[in-house]
Length: 121
Image (cartoon, rainbow, N blue to C red):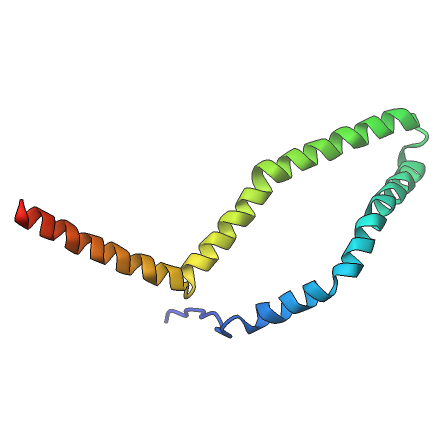
């Protein structure tokens, strides 16, 4: 017996609610944008102090951290972000996309027009 999992269709109400919450969190997001670099620096300093201080100098650890951070940014830009965009596009195309229906209709009309042109020539 084959079991097919069907996605719940709430006509976008969940995303509407999430969009409302994210819009209302604008002030919080701006304050977090200021706090995030300080948190990153504090956590990195804590890791250095606990695990690496006896083995590597502070300057060398800072350089290694900067290089690792840059590598992370490149990998995210090159691989992770395109995968996220592709997934979002695939999901929006696959599940009740009104634009898809319009494109299918346009393709059908184009095929009819091409047939008429072939018949007349």
